[in-house]
Image (tube, rainbow, N blue to C red; front, top):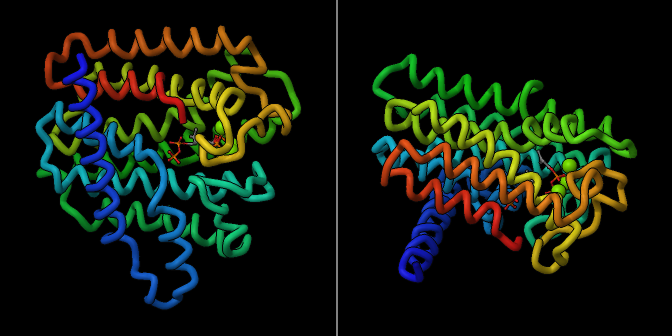
Length: 296
Ligand code: IPE
Ligand code: IPE
Ligand code: MG
Ligand code: MG
Ligand code: MG
């Protein structure tokens, strides 16, 4: 068991380092005009973040035998959309946060207009990458990857979930409504990470959809729990802000213990979804454990 733990930690460190290098290479140089925008884009993306979505992408690609070079591009595209969503999520008109990934948020370090444009440009760059690099033999499959990320980021995905989050602030939501919000604002991009990774290997087994759905929800349940339970120092973002801002979360809808138990239940369901897939799904299983048991 110890062996497996350290083996996973090694794999995780490897994907994180690989992604850092890939993102640094794929983002425009800070010296390129307009330098302020490019510097801020690099500030938002590099040196920070757990890179959970890239890890899911790589783990799903392992299952379908995808080439590492393709996975780097697909994972970078999803991570760029995620980073953009964080920059906008932190804006004063949304969650109004000053700390992200242990650093001042982009609008604090730069300014609000630049933060807005950073999000816009990261979003565009993600799709540029998917269009510029060959990720599948079959053009139709590559188009399916573009469509998958577009849908996951859009009004029926992340952006839609964020709209529901804003409308729900100060209100109480039922557990069913919370689940709907979380599956959209967070689950969608997690699902896209898994699907794009698998498609880099030519196919996405149906079991992965169920896996991604459960682990996507679990991810945000745990985010809610950590907001209430962990410190600003360990999270690298302001702790305790959900209750302060009147955000409906799994912690406001049920007890902390029940929210933890739900995350645990979802972890079990995610693991069960992988059962028919054999040994090549091992990393995905380990990631499900990491997502639910993480402390930051
Ligand atoms: C935070 O995501 C925002 C949510 C969708 C809950 P992460 O916890 O993956 O943030 P980073 O990328 O590690 O900073
Ligand atoms: C954000 O959810 C989900 C996104 C789409 C960015 P939160 O607002 O809970 O994320 P944190 O806690 O600020 O990272
Ligand atoms: Mg938010
Ligand atoms: Mg937030
Ligand atoms: Mg949160």
